[in-house]
Image (cartoon, rainbow, N blue to C red):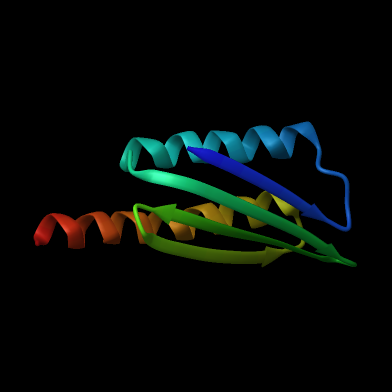
Length: 95
């Protein structure tokens, strides 16, 4: 799987990079058909936003979270996309 990290208006730190990588490894355990993961982190004054775009075998899952801390934003966005991935897996198994 390909992981693409983008930082807007700030320098991406190594701990943020490791946190995103840890989340991606966790998502791979749910579904091994994940092709690509794009993470966009943006800082505007006191607002930190994280967006996660996941390509799962032709299905695009997208989640965003905003908070005062980038770590919380990243966790929130990955938790949302994890829930979407679980729902997608349930729908595909139901067929």
